[in-house]
Amino acid sequence: MFNQLLKWTLLISIWRKYKQHIGITIALILALMLTSFLHQDFVNYSLAANNDSLGLSYVIKWLVYLGLVTVYWFSVTKVKSKSDKDSDLHRKMKVAKEQTVNQSANMTSENHPDPFANIREKKSLRSKADFFIEKAEIEKAKKSAGKE
Amino acid sequence: MKRIPNLKDKLNQKIRDKAISRAKTRIVLAGKVPEDFNEEQLEVIVKEEEEKILSGAKEKGLLVLASLLGLSLWG
Image (cartoon, rainbow over the protein chains, first blue to last red):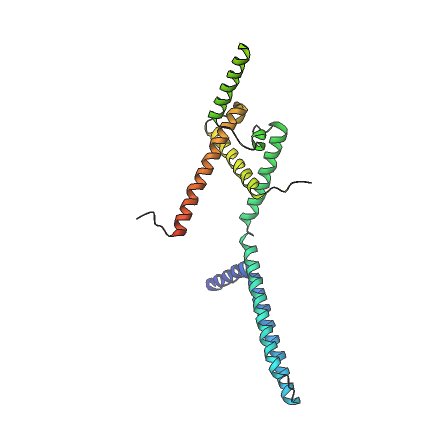
């Protein structure tokens, strides 16, 4: 009883996690088997009918195998990259991020204008020393203007 | 015609945004809000944070360069 439960839990958890991988693998095996059966039929026919294109059929068969394996490889890679970012945590993080962005956008635009808006646009920023120098130059200019 | 921003502009904007974000954090940690400061003061704070980011990036870059050249910093 307990063993059965454990077995089914394991199977279901594996199925839930790897169902796409399992599906693709089964499809690959079926496609390989189909190719093999078709080729076997063709070989039988060629032997019976003394057909010359037997060698070519082997080349085609292996090319088809190679193509199927390549497609399988790409499919598994695609599924893996998709599943890496497809979990409850990722969905919750996405929703939370969108909410935060909306809230901050509303706060910035309606209630509190962004105090950094001008700073964001400036090409280069000035340091404390730059401000001191600027002020000193302005004062100097004022003094020289006052003397004249 | 709209000018396509080049990579340098994009990078500078990223650094500026990061510096502003750090400046906001620094202001909050000091128990104040950005509105307590005038624009000059905010500019100075953001400038400081920007320089910190750039010097940090240079240090990391040197470490990466050293590791690429196979130099061990630990003897």
